[in-house]
Length: 308
Image 1 (cartoon, rainbow, N blue to C red):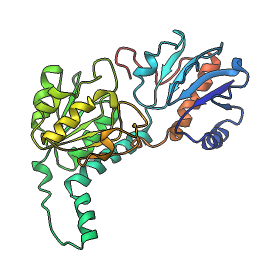
Image 2 (cartoon, one colour; image 1 turned 30 degrees about the horizontal axis):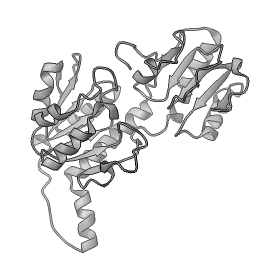
Image 3 (cartoon, helix red, strand yellow; image 1 turned 135 degrees about the vertical axis):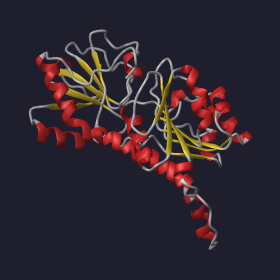
């Protein structure tokens, strides 16, 4: 029984090496070379091209190579009997947390400004201020959002976190529900979004949300691009409502060459790299492959109601 890897980002050679170390009997196929279709019991995918589900009679699971999985759950061509699993990998959690903090710290510590000054041989100081007087809003309290909130609280920032349901995190002010969102946004000097891409969050961060943010706030998105109205974000940046934005995810990926986000002076864009690579999660993927082949219950199944 085989795994079919469907990917834009992963290194098939690395996958084969890691799978061989776990169980040399696991066969890896790489889309579109599927070989004997009946052998495939699990698809591991970071993209779902047209026709990927066709003609796979023994497919049991789609293992999405990320933490959110709403677009896989809702995919029109996914057979109803094929389960959707997601990653809950500590390595990805660490990687996204590190990336989010790096973006925040780079802005707070004026590193881009100092890069320019270095080239100009200019010696000028800027005050970053006291972290205890800096409020950071974290939107989305899944495993990654929780880790980001905890990390910031450990650095003694004031952290206000928001989710659709109630949470408790030591040292963090947790709020929930649609009525609480504007207040969270209005308090924050920095807003970090790790929201999943669900029906409830698509376009949630639009003109109203940006208007609710504290004037001069800095926006960071390491969640899902579809949660942000990019036209409304650009308008908020141009008007001066926001001091800047750091974006790792976009409505359409790769980001179109003619997107105004590329050259916007207040935008830092990275090509969806916050989470690193899913190869670090191969042990759990191999376990789902074994379970799928054996007809056993799968692990890390996504919740259709939540979308992750």
